[in-house]
Every structure is written in structure tokens, then in C-alpha cells.
Image (tube, rainbow, N blue to C red):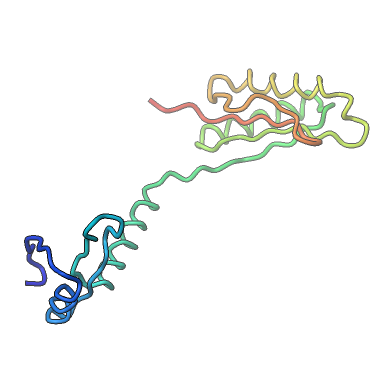
Length: 153
């Protein structure tokens, strides 16, 4: 009778506890907010085990997002830019997001426009492999842009 589906019965809590005790199972309240409350006679440890198993399979199927960071200065040279651009392309082709930021130290904060131009140039160069998720925005001493890989067809 344990593995079989039993048709639902409306009974008092005392009767339900008696039935659960006879079967050696637990009485679990499923929906306490309805009138009368919905309860189920099940093996509680097996129920918890099945819930954990379902959660684990859902988590294993979930896609993990990897974020790689690239750091620039407001006066980054052309060679350094190309070098980091190649790394960003590789990261995007591998399926990771790229978070590029220009870090302003000391008085270099006056070069905000240069930092924004640098990040927009990076986004334009990565247009074929990635899509801009967040446009450049200033966050304290950093100007940040996030680029996600394009969906594969």
C-alpha cells in the first residue's frame, strides 16, 4: 500500500495521524493555508532525499556564467590595446563574458572621455563575437563595460 496511489480522503488530524502510524510513515502538511489543510502520508526522509536529488539535477543542468576581467588605463597604448583585444576575443569565443574597465588613478580622472572612447573602441572591435550588455558607466574610479558572447546558431 505504501507505493500505491491511494485516493484522497477527508478526515480529521487524529485519523490521519492514526493512518500514518499504522503504515509507519509520516504525516506531512502540504498546503496549510487552505481550509481544510492538505496533508499527505509519506516517508519524509525519502521525500527530502528526492527533493535534494531534483535540486542537484537542476543545478547541474544550469549554465554557469564565467566573467573574465580586462583592466585598462586611460592612456593605454595601441600595442597593449591590441594584446588585450585578442584576449577578449578568445574569452568570448570560449563562452565567457568580458568585463572591461578603465581604472583612473589619482588625477587621471580628468581623462574620463578617453576612457569611454577606449571602451567603445573595444566594444566596436568585438562586435563580430560579442554583444554589449552594459554601456560604459563610471563607478567610482572605474569605468566599466560588460560584453557577452553572441549566441551560437
